[in-house]
Image (cartoon, rainbow, N blue to C red; front, side, top):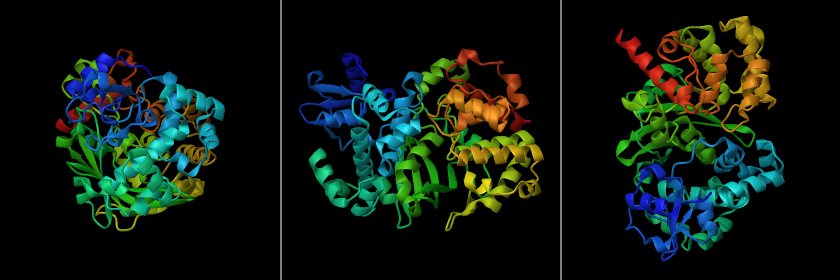
Length: 478
């Protein structure tokens, strides 16, 4: 990635949040690298070096700023299809994939050879996948030290280091100070934590239509699994880890003055913090670029800028939702989803009021007989589709998550599993995070929207979200 130095420097002088996460500025006179929004006094241009990512800055010998905290920068989102393989690998690394697997497994996961992965990764990020992973572990550890009260040993293990000694040594050599120095400066998030919870703030680029996002989540919430209030979202969750499912709950609250969401996690989820934070960012679409998207949507976004498209904590759950919504009206579909969650989901202990269970996994539903599923009220065609979906996910013949090969995955959903086009587009939008998906299944939405929405490509999913919100508001007013 190349940079226009003058443009980057102008963004640094203006502390322009549109560029937060898109590059980092390193200052030769201090040996420190920062986000372009750092509040410290702006450096001289002659002393600035610009890097595409934190790993490249650290490989060049710079340390992360303790004020703006580069580990908090928003990510890139899905913008350039030609870079999707490298971005897919980076997303998996950021979620902790290499903490438990090797580079060959990562290459197989994104569908290329190990040699090819190294080549495209270094071309995109300027560092090797291993160097990139090391930086991600260090930044995750730095975040946990600053924002939680976890013991240092647990911080090291959660961030993906094999031993506390290795963590301490690498941290001190890379950053020039000890982990204890970070721990001395407790943040508001750390002070908000309790013995039973962790609290972490996740920044975003403004504007953020939080109320509209909550409205969308309210209309889709599964009772017992999710709870949405006028200002927060809470969810029971089960995350795969070391052959088991780690259960717990999380809550998201909006901090508009900080341009962040405050995420409170039950302490039981500590072992899966890296992967879970990546899921949370996708679910709330925190890496969205509203400046680019709203400019493309034009008048459609003028009244409500910063619309987000909700993602998925589990792509399989999203596909099951689609199956339910194609067989019943929304209220009946959600009643059925609640029944199967209560019957086959994973109970979550000590969850907040209103939460009982995490949504059942593909493995859990794949083991349920067709007769038992028919007894829940699902028509035979839906049962056949659901069991085929569960089996395909369990056998890893299809992956319902961002950065999977789009065309092949959508074709698999249509031809092998038997989903209709609305369901395929719904899964593409929420589970695959594809910004150009265009699900217009609701007749009221279809009346409001053009046939193909080509004028809004490649952001048709955001246009569809605007229409869905407008249709909901119109229905509520009626």
